[in-house]
Image 1 (cartoon, rainbow, N blue to C red):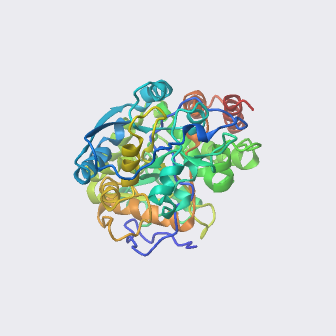
Image 2: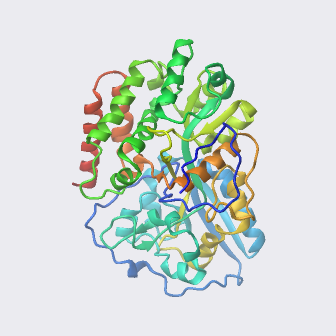
Image 3: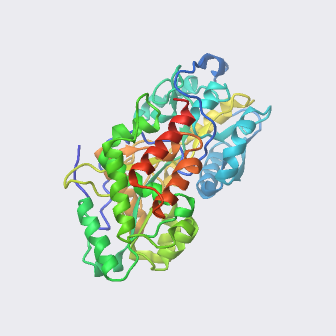
Length: 457
């Protein structure tokens, strides 16, 4: 396992075969619905297709796809490539904002005529309610065992309703990654010419920026952006395995621990030191992005979904790097999951054609479309058929993906732990922490309480 870090803000994209991504799934732009707690029994046989065929070259078929609005460019590119290979199959794309999908998803999945290729979020409740097709027969028919198993692990739900093993219920269209964007020229003026090797080095730059009268970090806490910064710290203090166990709702998992509190205390120290924009509680994601691109801060915590506009507006002045570990030489850990995890509703009448599209997502064309749109492709990242760019912030993002895979440091997003955790805990508690209304200990305990209430523990 490699423990090297990028040596500059524009690391070289290595095409040597990397290790697989560990636990890299679920949706980077969230689709959250009600979920069942561990202990519910699931009969996957009831949703497993019996008439399975990989031959879809027959009659004309129109499939509908339902996805989040932010993934339109990626979807359109992959759909066009699929239709070129399968001229008898037409795919009609419908998108909705995430907050709309979060409320409509159970209803549309249960309808008599759902979109056959459907973005799914937290899987447990959909599987328990028999709303999704078990993909195991298609996995066998298409040979999906060739896909690195760790890239699909979070799409599996076992008979007890716990993610991590059991039948497969979704396939990712590509992967996202969240970490740090940096304004190169501002950072260079502060003495930072390469990614910080440790958390202490990052804090040195933050302090220098504040001393120079600059805003160190632009954060969108109107919609819970402070929680993402907390996870950067939690990933290292608590570790990838324990963090994922909490997200997967493993019995006994908690962030109300010395490590979870230490991460919150560090975050509180950053708030008290003035390392964030003073109006963070009134700033949403789009505003934070615009202000960072306008040169109003040194850093922006965000993901590769913003690589396109950042590259277009900042060109060579923008960089991207993985959150630095506490200790020098330690492996990198960062949150990453699917651009869109697509499942097949149980009521879909054209399951074979829908499965053919899911299988297409591992093709050369689909993987290249993922890379072209700033995402890491499904499968081995180094396959010669999908060529990563070597220019701009996209190169930084792709190199970070490769480094994270080598370090085996992928964790899911903490918001994915329960259906309402973002709106009921991360956003309001983060705003209260930023305003100085609660302590670090209260921040952690309050989130843990909502978590336990939502999973029925």
